[in-house]
Image (cartoon, rainbow, N blue to C red; front, side, top):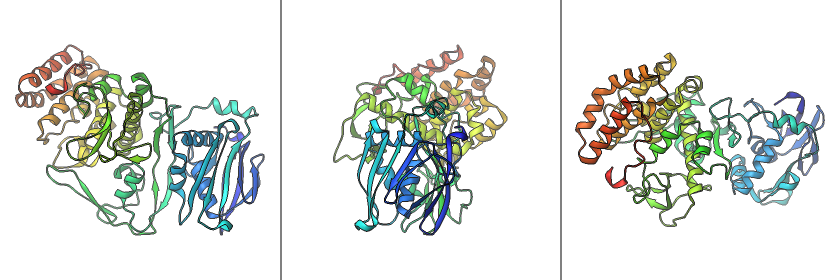
Length: 469
């Protein structure tokens, strides 16, 4: 955004002073009064909890500098959107410390305003806090001409993506990397990547097990301040079909359609989501396209099952794929990931979607090759990176078969010569997997491989019935 549409403001809260930016026309209201951004030099007096709420709202949209607190009209618009999704109160509570709670959050869309009562139970130290902006200004046009960005990444450059910027967090008693990752719906690797000061073996330790998922121990002390990295969500109602899904994630339609035939979905309608909570076979409550996280901010439960629509399932899938893209970028690096062809990126995301970073890329028991993907991408050797998406030591027949399907889908954006080279390198692994299959599974995989030789690298699994897999 252009600097001339922001003013510099000094905030005094507690015993601290901090310089922030506010877009002209935005207002903040607390017990001290109404503060409207008009020109540089304004001073706002706040309490600590008021500053925490201010930072929470300013955290909604990335104004290209993660080290500053910047309140823009876009931040307030996203807060209004979060209210409509039932997420505003949840978002504010993430930033509040001590005994403060959020009561009665409200949004007034026609007034471009949100408000909430923040209290610790004592009226003298509680207040209604409001954020608003005046829409009658030419500056709005300047904002609308600037595309929304996401932590500097072109991969997440889509107006339907909501960005929760990185912020500092001080560990409380009982906090661990694992609990924080769960609370903020991140992977522990993302938190570690955002905090290079953390040392393996000192602050945390990863335990790898054969034929099991990796586990982690956390030794970070209470009171330590770390960075919670950027988090991504999708505007409600923005994913109505596969085309929307592809535009938002940047992944290929062929990959997504093929992905849906191998995850846990409705057995009677292959490739379709299960619209009611179900048991994935391991006691994990699951819904939609294999989603096991939260829905509308609430954890899934097998005791209290819920129903969703197909549009809801697509929306959830879009967010899941974005989260796994962010996870992969934390491992590979933004530049390496962004310059890779879309079909190769899709194959790499599929590894993370299937097994995560610790097991999918770094577990020495599960792979001999995925750890090489980072160097492959750095060299621009995308055929090698695609071959390295396999995990040589994976004993599970279904996962080895998925490795081949993933590889074939990833060939789409390679040149014919690079595709042929990659298939020659992968031929031995393909034949090993093929020998482990029988009947329909054998026929499908063989046909998919032969079709790939002729250049047909996607759409090969959509017709496969669940019972045949």
